[in-house]
Amino acid sequence: MKKPYLLLVISLLTATILCVFGQGIAYFLSDHVVDTYPIYYLTGLTILGWILYLLSFIMFLMFRIVFKIKDSNYIQYQGFIMIGFISAPFAVSWSFFVVAMWWG
Image: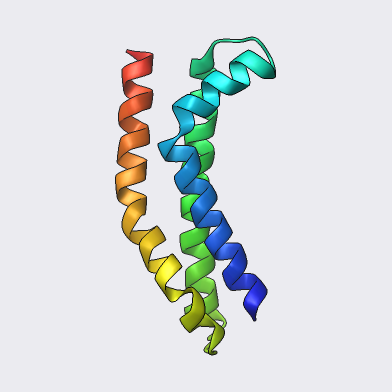
């Protein structure tokens, strides 16, 4: 059962990166992918980060409650998962603040 928890950790890390470093990623995408206003990239990246956090929470509930998965592999990832869920409100708040400032 390593793969589901690894997927959960990757989802949390990706969501955190998108929410915290979304502004820099938006500038990079604007310069190197399609030349458009970075605010559109930032908004899309922020929404994607929020969706990944929500899906991570749903996956966590499915693994632990619905499917009643209890194995030793969970202990290996428990620290990463807890850090992810603790950092999620701060990352989401930060990304909301940045997007709100950009939109004016």
